[in-house]
Image (cartoon, rainbow, N blue to C red; front, top):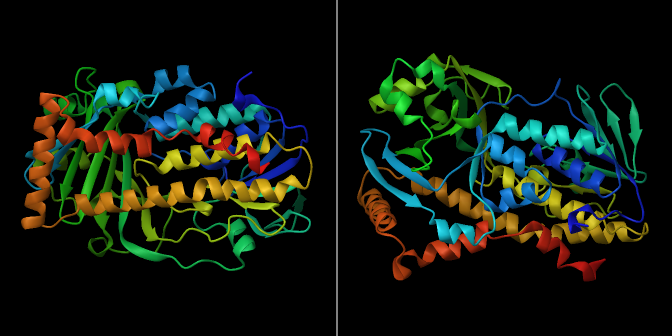
Length: 435
């Protein structure tokens, strides 16, 4: 029997607040471990967010271990490189290519996927494993001793544990830390859309730009002064996902609303870029927008009893639409499920909750720092710093074409092993002594 399918000797009742990737993945793993799970979500139904998601090897590894290999082959597309393009001129600046033999050492592929396909995959599996999901159910307050949630209509639901997978403005986090943490606008928003490629048939240049190629598995990143656009092909090659990051100061009415359910008409967005990208961005009638905020990780991820627990962005916020956005939530779910598959008696609960934070905190902080630095690299204004960056990108492109060079490409090996080589299941299994 796979280690990830171990059944807990003691089976308990969980309420998970939030039916995003984190909540669904946690529900799946806890049900597989023999627990009973009820997910509550304020949304009217399953997430229909636009755009795509990265599944680097550390995420793909988790999903394959959960039995999703066939679905990943159906919906995901393998990628090996990022091609950097000037957002102003359309000139190719350079690229970063992940070498095949190095990537294979991580034990899994690097995929891109439509966010909807990833979500639906997890949703079906969680329900099939036994999770109950109730939508249109806003949680007003969460209490400990005993663990329970109070809904906006006054209904109180009890459980043995309550897990907050309800994002950066978490109601559960407020119950754990005692106050609502401060968030500071970062100054940018992400604008997301998906284009069906069949609408591009009369524009050969865009049709070629958005085509998935087995022999050249790269995706474009247009980079400019305090702005960038990342795009990649999804849905088996039939759609093209766009993630555009723009300064808030250039968009009217930015403070009025926030969240993935906010749609911004195309005409309100200041897209003034190189012609090919401009034509591409002009196609969607509107974009879904989410703002970027600086948010701190919670100091404590569980209350004293261990019966209230935070995971995903409720515990450790991360910018939306970055490479590791979904990975951190999937890793959390794997570690959480593995830990609670060992539950034998009630006294273990606070220790397992504590072990979860100990196992995940350093990893999530390191990833947050890396992803934040990456934005700075993309947003360099014209000047010597940008020239140096472009020279480095060009050099990496040339080296990638030449093949592996031990001196120049050693950084890639280190980066892959630190980030992509991480195995969430192994990390959880290595801490057996705690339980």
